[in-house]
Length: 311
Image (cartoon, rainbow, N blue to C red):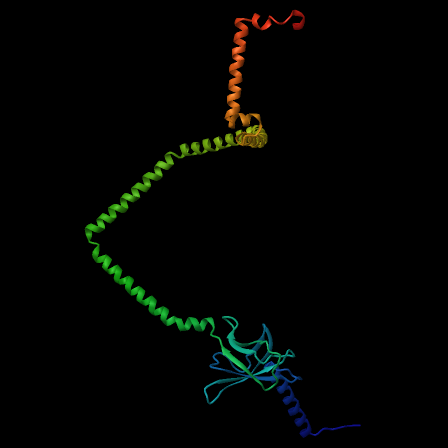
Protein backbone atom coordinates (compact mmCIF):
# COMPACT_ATOMS: atom_id res chain seq x y z
CA UNK A 1 0.00 0.00 0.00
CA UNK A 2 1.48 3.23 -1.10
CA UNK A 3 1.01 6.15 1.28
CA UNK A 4 1.91 9.47 -0.24
CA UNK A 5 2.21 12.50 2.07
CA UNK A 6 1.44 15.91 0.77
CA UNK A 7 3.95 18.69 1.09
CA UNK A 8 1.75 20.46 3.66
CA UNK A 9 1.83 17.42 5.96
CA UNK A 10 5.57 17.12 5.63
CA UNK A 11 6.03 20.77 6.50
CA UNK A 12 3.70 20.42 9.48
CA UNK A 13 5.57 17.37 10.83
CA UNK A 14 8.89 19.12 10.36
CA UNK A 15 7.69 22.21 12.26
CA UNK A 16 6.29 20.02 15.07
CA UNK A 17 9.52 18.05 15.43
CA UNK A 18 11.51 21.28 15.38
CA UNK A 19 9.33 22.67 18.18
CA UNK A 20 9.77 19.49 20.24
CA UNK A 21 13.55 19.58 19.78
CA UNK A 22 13.63 23.29 20.62
CA UNK A 23 11.62 22.78 23.82
CA UNK A 24 13.77 19.83 24.89
CA UNK A 25 16.96 21.75 24.07
CA UNK A 26 15.68 24.84 25.89
CA UNK A 27 14.84 22.83 29.02
CA UNK A 28 18.18 21.03 28.81
CA UNK A 29 20.16 24.24 28.42
CA UNK A 30 18.24 25.83 31.31
CA UNK A 31 19.03 22.77 33.45
CA UNK A 32 15.33 21.93 33.70
CA UNK A 33 14.31 18.25 33.65
CA UNK A 34 12.92 17.30 30.32
CA UNK A 35 10.22 14.86 31.42
CA UNK A 36 9.74 15.70 35.10
CA UNK A 37 8.06 18.61 36.81
CA UNK A 38 10.17 20.94 38.93
CA UNK A 39 9.20 22.48 42.25
CA UNK A 40 9.02 26.26 41.90
CA UNK A 41 10.29 28.29 44.87
CA UNK A 42 10.57 32.07 45.22
CA UNK A 43 13.02 34.12 47.28
CA UNK A 44 13.38 37.89 47.68
CA UNK A 45 16.75 39.70 47.90
CA UNK A 46 17.80 43.28 48.54
CA UNK A 47 19.90 43.08 45.38
CA UNK A 48 20.86 40.43 42.84
CA UNK A 49 24.27 41.44 41.49
CA UNK A 50 25.70 38.68 39.30
CA UNK A 51 22.61 36.46 39.31
CA UNK A 52 20.60 35.80 36.16
CA UNK A 53 18.24 33.34 34.58
CA UNK A 54 20.01 29.98 34.39
CA UNK A 55 22.20 30.49 37.46
CA UNK A 56 22.60 27.33 39.51
CA UNK A 57 21.05 26.47 42.89
CA UNK A 58 22.95 24.29 45.41
CA UNK A 59 22.17 22.43 48.61
CA UNK A 60 25.21 21.32 50.62
CA UNK A 61 27.39 21.70 47.52
CA UNK A 62 25.12 19.60 45.29
CA UNK A 63 23.28 21.21 42.38
CA UNK A 64 19.52 20.86 42.85
CA UNK A 65 18.11 23.32 40.33
CA UNK A 66 18.47 26.63 38.55
CA UNK A 67 17.11 30.17 38.47
CA UNK A 68 14.10 30.56 36.16
CA UNK A 69 13.65 34.33 36.31
CA UNK A 70 14.85 37.48 38.07
CA UNK A 71 12.49 40.44 38.39
CA UNK A 72 12.23 43.71 40.30
CA UNK A 73 9.06 44.41 42.29
CA UNK A 74 7.37 47.79 42.84
CA UNK A 75 8.98 47.91 46.31
CA UNK A 76 12.45 47.68 44.66
CA UNK A 77 12.92 44.14 45.94
CA UNK A 78 14.49 41.54 43.68
CA UNK A 79 12.25 38.51 43.19
CA UNK A 80 14.13 35.35 42.16
CA UNK A 81 12.12 32.40 40.87
CA UNK A 82 13.91 29.03 41.20
CA UNK A 83 13.11 25.57 39.82
CA UNK A 84 14.26 22.81 42.19
CA UNK A 85 14.69 19.35 40.67
CA UNK A 86 15.26 17.36 43.87
CA UNK A 87 13.21 14.87 45.81
CA UNK A 88 14.78 15.99 49.08
CA UNK A 89 12.20 17.92 51.15
CA UNK A 90 13.11 21.55 51.90
CA UNK A 91 12.14 22.77 55.41
CA UNK A 92 10.16 26.00 55.61
CA UNK A 93 12.80 27.76 57.74
CA UNK A 94 15.42 27.33 55.01
CA UNK A 95 17.28 30.39 53.69
CA UNK A 96 18.39 31.08 50.10
CA UNK A 97 21.81 32.76 50.18
CA UNK A 98 22.96 34.58 47.03
CA UNK A 99 26.73 34.29 47.07
CA UNK A 100 29.83 33.48 45.07
CA UNK A 101 31.31 30.00 45.55
CA UNK A 102 34.75 31.09 44.29
CA UNK A 103 36.60 34.06 42.87
CA UNK A 104 36.47 32.92 39.22
CA UNK A 105 32.91 31.53 39.20
CA UNK A 106 29.77 33.65 38.93
CA UNK A 107 27.09 34.07 41.53
CA UNK A 108 24.93 31.14 42.66
CA UNK A 109 22.21 30.51 45.19
CA UNK A 110 22.93 28.20 48.12
CA UNK A 111 19.94 26.96 50.12
CA UNK A 112 20.76 26.54 53.81
CA UNK A 113 18.33 23.96 55.17
CA UNK A 114 16.34 24.83 58.26
CA UNK A 115 15.29 22.59 61.15
CA UNK A 116 11.51 22.81 60.78
CA UNK A 117 9.40 19.64 60.48
CA UNK A 118 7.19 21.36 57.89
CA UNK A 119 8.34 21.44 54.29
CA UNK A 120 7.73 23.88 51.46
CA UNK A 121 5.62 23.07 48.45
CA UNK A 122 5.78 24.28 44.88
CA UNK A 123 4.89 27.97 44.74
CA UNK A 124 6.03 28.78 48.30
CA UNK A 125 8.55 31.46 49.24
CA UNK A 126 11.63 31.25 51.47
CA UNK A 127 13.83 33.92 53.03
CA UNK A 128 16.57 35.36 50.81
CA UNK A 129 19.88 36.80 51.98
CA UNK A 130 22.60 38.49 49.93
CA UNK A 131 26.20 37.67 50.91
CA UNK A 132 28.93 39.94 49.58
CA UNK A 133 31.84 38.19 47.87
CA UNK A 134 35.50 38.82 48.57
CA UNK A 135 35.92 40.88 45.42
CA UNK A 136 32.98 43.10 46.40
CA UNK A 137 34.43 43.69 49.85
CA UNK A 138 37.82 44.50 48.34
CA UNK A 139 36.14 46.84 45.86
CA UNK A 140 34.29 48.67 48.63
CA UNK A 141 37.43 48.99 50.72
CA UNK A 142 39.63 49.87 47.72
CA UNK A 143 38.87 53.60 47.91
CA UNK A 144 39.60 53.75 51.63
CA UNK A 145 42.82 51.79 51.20
CA UNK A 146 43.87 54.02 48.29
CA UNK A 147 43.24 57.16 50.35
CA UNK A 148 45.21 55.75 53.28
CA UNK A 149 48.13 54.73 51.04
CA UNK A 150 48.11 58.13 49.32
CA UNK A 151 48.13 59.93 52.67
CA UNK A 152 50.94 57.74 53.96
CA UNK A 153 53.05 58.36 50.86
CA UNK A 154 52.47 62.10 51.17
CA UNK A 155 53.57 62.06 54.82
CA UNK A 156 56.62 59.97 53.92
CA UNK A 157 57.53 62.36 51.11
CA UNK A 158 57.20 65.33 53.48
CA UNK A 159 59.36 63.57 56.06
CA UNK A 160 62.06 62.85 53.50
CA UNK A 161 62.05 66.48 52.38
CA UNK A 162 62.46 67.66 55.97
CA UNK A 163 65.21 65.13 56.55
CA UNK A 164 66.99 66.21 53.39
CA UNK A 165 66.80 69.88 54.42
CA UNK A 166 68.09 69.03 57.91
CA UNK A 167 71.13 67.16 56.63
CA UNK A 168 73.62 69.82 55.61
CA UNK A 169 77.02 69.14 54.05
CA UNK A 170 78.83 68.76 57.39
CA UNK A 171 76.19 66.33 58.69
CA UNK A 172 76.41 64.25 55.53
CA UNK A 173 80.21 64.18 55.88
CA UNK A 174 79.88 63.00 59.50
CA UNK A 175 77.44 60.29 58.45
CA UNK A 176 79.76 59.21 55.64
CA UNK A 177 82.71 59.07 58.06
CA UNK A 178 80.64 57.09 60.55
CA UNK A 179 79.57 54.60 57.88
CA UNK A 180 83.16 54.36 56.62
CA UNK A 181 84.42 53.73 60.18
CA UNK A 182 81.79 51.03 60.70
CA UNK A 183 82.83 49.37 57.43
CA UNK A 184 86.51 49.48 58.48
CA UNK A 185 85.62 47.98 61.85
CA UNK A 186 83.63 45.20 60.20
CA UNK A 187 86.54 44.54 57.80
CA UNK A 188 89.03 44.41 60.68
CA UNK A 189 86.79 42.06 62.61
CA UNK A 190 86.42 39.81 59.59
CA UNK A 191 90.21 39.72 59.07
CA UNK A 192 90.77 38.95 62.75
CA UNK A 193 88.31 36.07 62.60
CA UNK A 194 90.01 34.72 59.50
CA UNK A 195 93.45 34.93 61.20
CA UNK A 196 92.14 33.23 64.33
CA UNK A 197 90.19 30.60 62.43
CA UNK A 198 92.69 27.87 63.26
CA UNK A 199 92.73 28.86 66.95
CA UNK A 200 88.95 28.82 67.04
CA UNK A 201 88.86 25.39 65.42
CA UNK A 202 91.47 24.12 67.92
CA UNK A 203 89.43 25.49 70.82
CA UNK A 204 86.29 23.84 69.49
CA UNK A 205 88.17 20.56 69.03
CA UNK A 206 89.57 20.78 72.58
CA UNK A 207 86.11 21.43 73.97
CA UNK A 208 84.70 18.48 72.06
CA UNK A 209 87.52 16.23 73.32
CA UNK A 210 86.92 17.38 76.90
CA UNK A 211 83.22 16.61 76.59
CA UNK A 212 84.03 13.14 75.24
CA UNK A 213 86.40 12.53 78.16
CA UNK A 214 83.76 13.66 80.63
CA UNK A 215 81.26 11.33 79.01
CA UNK A 216 83.73 8.41 79.21
CA UNK A 217 84.52 9.24 82.84
CA UNK A 218 80.86 9.31 83.71
CA UNK A 219 80.32 5.90 82.08
CA UNK A 220 83.34 4.40 83.92
CA UNK A 221 82.32 5.72 87.33
CA UNK A 222 78.64 4.91 86.93
CA UNK A 223 78.92 1.41 88.55
CA UNK A 224 80.72 2.85 91.58
CA UNK A 225 78.19 5.62 91.86
CA UNK A 226 75.39 3.05 91.73
CA UNK A 227 77.11 0.99 94.43
CA UNK A 228 77.53 4.11 96.58
CA UNK A 229 73.86 4.92 96.16
CA UNK A 230 72.91 1.37 97.24
CA UNK A 231 75.13 1.69 100.34
CA UNK A 232 73.61 5.07 101.16
CA UNK A 233 70.11 3.64 100.87
CA UNK A 234 71.07 0.77 103.25
CA UNK A 235 72.54 3.24 105.76
CA UNK A 236 69.40 5.31 105.56
CA UNK A 237 67.27 2.24 106.29
CA UNK A 238 69.55 1.39 109.29
CA UNK A 239 69.22 4.96 110.55
CA UNK A 240 65.46 4.73 110.25
CA UNK A 241 65.50 1.48 112.28
CA UNK A 242 67.78 3.08 114.88
CA UNK A 243 65.47 6.06 115.05
CA UNK A 244 62.53 3.77 115.75
CA UNK A 245 64.45 2.05 118.58
CA UNK A 246 65.56 5.40 120.02
CA UNK A 247 61.98 6.62 120.01
CA UNK A 248 60.90 3.45 121.82
CA UNK A 249 63.70 3.83 124.39
CA UNK A 250 62.80 7.49 124.88
CA UNK A 251 59.19 6.53 125.47
CA UNK A 252 60.23 3.91 128.08
CA UNK A 253 62.53 6.42 129.80
CA UNK A 254 59.68 8.93 129.90
CA UNK A 255 57.47 6.30 131.58
CA UNK A 256 60.20 5.52 134.18
CA UNK A 257 60.76 9.21 134.95
CA UNK A 258 57.03 9.74 135.23
CA UNK A 259 56.75 6.86 137.76
CA UNK A 260 59.70 8.24 139.75
CA UNK A 261 58.13 11.68 139.71
CA UNK A 262 54.81 10.16 140.90
CA UNK A 263 56.63 8.37 143.79
CA UNK A 264 56.12 4.86 142.44
CA UNK A 265 58.72 2.19 143.36
CA UNK A 266 61.66 2.35 145.72
CA UNK A 267 63.52 4.95 143.69
CA UNK A 268 60.41 7.06 143.47
CA UNK A 269 59.76 6.95 147.18
CA UNK A 270 63.45 7.66 147.81
CA UNK A 271 63.29 10.73 145.59
CA UNK A 272 59.94 12.05 146.77
CA UNK A 273 59.81 10.84 150.49
CA UNK A 274 62.26 12.82 152.66
CA UNK A 275 61.76 10.52 155.68
CA UNK A 276 62.92 7.51 153.74
CA UNK A 277 65.96 9.47 152.61
CA UNK A 278 66.70 10.38 156.25
CA UNK A 279 66.30 6.73 157.35
CA UNK A 280 68.67 5.54 154.65
CA UNK A 281 71.10 8.31 155.61
CA UNK A 282 70.87 7.33 159.31
CA UNK A 283 71.39 3.66 158.41
CA UNK A 284 74.43 4.60 156.38
CA UNK A 285 75.89 6.53 159.32
CA UNK A 286 75.33 3.61 161.72
CA UNK A 287 76.89 1.14 159.24
CA UNK A 288 79.90 3.39 158.95
CA UNK A 289 80.21 3.52 162.77
CA UNK A 290 79.89 -0.29 163.01
CA UNK A 291 82.55 -0.85 160.37
CA UNK A 292 84.82 1.69 162.04
CA UNK A 293 84.26 -0.04 165.49
CA UNK A 294 85.06 -3.47 164.02
CA UNK A 295 88.24 -2.12 162.52
CA UNK A 296 89.29 -0.43 165.73
CA UNK A 297 88.33 -3.19 168.25
CA UNK A 298 87.23 -6.41 166.60
CA UNK A 299 87.57 -8.34 169.90
CA UNK A 300 84.69 -6.51 171.39
CA UNK A 301 82.35 -7.98 168.81
CA UNK A 302 83.93 -11.48 168.75
CA UNK A 303 84.51 -12.15 172.46
CA UNK A 304 81.20 -13.92 172.94
CA UNK A 305 81.57 -16.03 169.78
CA UNK A 306 83.36 -19.33 169.77
CA UNK A 307 85.31 -20.72 166.94
CA UNK A 308 82.78 -23.48 166.47
CA UNK A 309 79.92 -20.99 166.10
CA UNK A 310 81.87 -19.04 163.61
CA UNK A 311 82.85 -21.95 161.41
